Length: 314
Image (cartoon, rainbow, N blue to C red; front, side, top):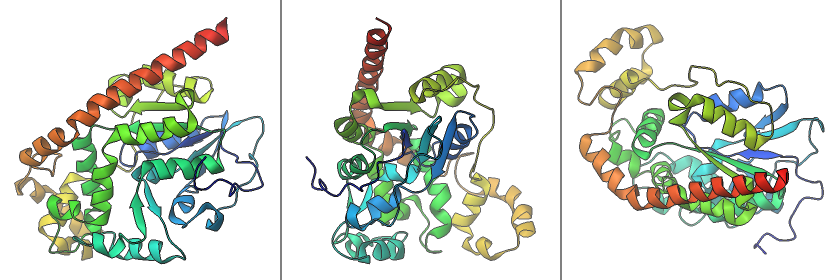
């Protein structure tokens, strides 16, 4: 029994599958693939209000029936994986989060109303969509945080755009905490059950696309379709480097930005990477134990689904 028992909306939750991330791990790409599948209907970005409201009873998002009862309904909201939950009364938590989210050293400004907790996130979503299955897409943390840093850099103060500065912001802290994938997986397994959680890896989209498509479609319960080649919302390392060392670029016309891109190669940093080798080593050490636990959890989930399939065949 969770602390939100009794606050379930009177209309049944409409999600067959909730796809909760991770952002910058091909979430838009996979979301587009699912949305275009003929056996699926989908909604986007309607889960976060259940985390940003101080309680489910105060959430503004309505719960309705499935758009098409003959199709699988998938709700896509990859930001849920960051597990940013608001607590307390009123809307002050969300207001403070939006105000200080990209300000270095501002955690004290939000900590009274914001908690980073995958277990609380899972509890809230289970109250709303108790029969849903949960899809997670994870990415190796160094590459993932490098991509997140590139994406969010434009929002950092002009004089504080290093990776250390990003990690000192509330958003950066949320990303670092979310990198402990085993905690997020465990939270949703505890709430929804081992047979209702699927974890796929970003790297398999290119490295093992046939297997990735088969596992994805089998979990959702739809006919297998091939994964298209290409990416969505791919961040530019060249522009990100210019943003870091020449913040004024954000004020320049698009044509001038494009003309300056070739000069980015002369700036410090490896091709495609903004994180330094030292940053990369520190992150790999930080998540080493978590990744071992994640590997065991993913293996257990796979075994659970295999056993369930065998029982169904018998």
